[in-house]
Amino acid sequence: MMDKYATGSTTRLVRSFDGGPLKDFTDAVTYDDALFIDAMVADGSVAAVARAKVVGNAFLYVQAHDVAGDGRLRAAYAPQPLRKPGDVVVDDNTSDVGNMAWVGQALVRLYATTSDGAYLIGAVQIAQWLEAHTYDVRGAGGYTGGYSARGKKIEWKSTEHNIDVFAFFTMLATESGESQWSADAAWAKRFVASMWDARGGRFYVGTATDGVTPNKSFKPEDVNSWSYLAFANPLWAAAPSWDVTNLAVTRSGFSGVSFCSGDRSGVWFEGTAHLADALEFRRASGDLPQAQEYLRDIAYAQTNGPNGDGRGIIAASRTIGDCDGDKYFASLHVGATAWYILAASEANPFLLR
Image 1 (cartoon, helix red, strand yellow):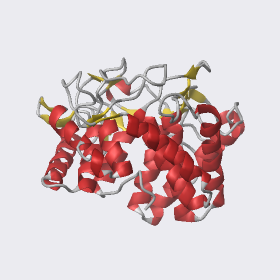
Image 2 (cartoon, rainbow, N blue to C red):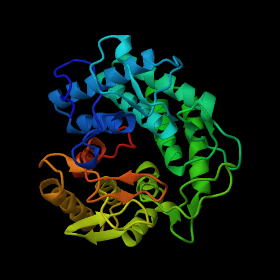
Image 3 (cartoon, rainbow, N blue to C red):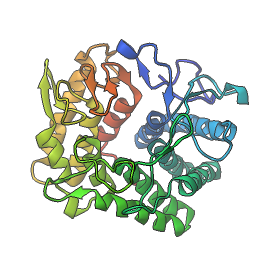
Image 4 (cartoon, helix red, strand yellow):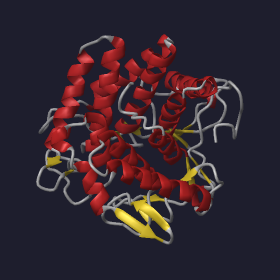
């Protein structure tokens, strides 16, 4: 996927999807490319780290030449070679907090791996933008969702985004030596804690636009597995088990978990991978056998899934909803593939080391 439009050291981002319903979707989604870096660094070979640096350099390039010019990155760019500023093409203008936090932590990880200060500078610029534009004092605090593609401030707050921000700022505090980022990480954690449903043993997805009222109806997988990977808090240790129990899917020969409780008609393989990773990290009774079963489910989809190529991982076994108006498809997906690599390596992307 990285070499579709250029090879070698040419600065470029990686196209996110291929084949199936998304065969014509050419965007390089920044979240997926950040995961690409995480997976390559987890591999650790000289060749893999070299590839991670190419994508990291691409993030720095689009950051420097984005028309906003204020340190932010957008949700998606064109994956074409980046040889001149005019090659920076924004495919999704949204200033998404979660995506930026993932890019930020990937850049911090590259700095920790290579000692190249340019990556740390880029990460700091992202963090400063998040702090200036999304820090929120309503309710339990935390950070808002960012800005829409039309430039309107997103007023709701996402538990998942705040988990991402916590991990990013914690890494940044470690590598920069600046204690302010630890305080800001704690602000994100404060919000996440307010979204814990102790009776249900799961996290609420976030708030309504008032920044206070929990959204209790939308029940996705990622917030529960990511919360454990990021915090390893014994008080929240039931969260991954909620996913295992309530999102299990076996349909048309494929098994794993769905994206959300409202659509269990197919398997979401990216989520199945990060749930496997969370179980490996938690290591409670039965966790490792369950994680291995999930990894076998993904490996089966790798070789037998619709629109597969025997190497990449399809996002889902069939078209499924995310219970919030969007869909996942049986198309090869860089994000799902990267999460599979991370889970198979028992690598936790929410921790620096």
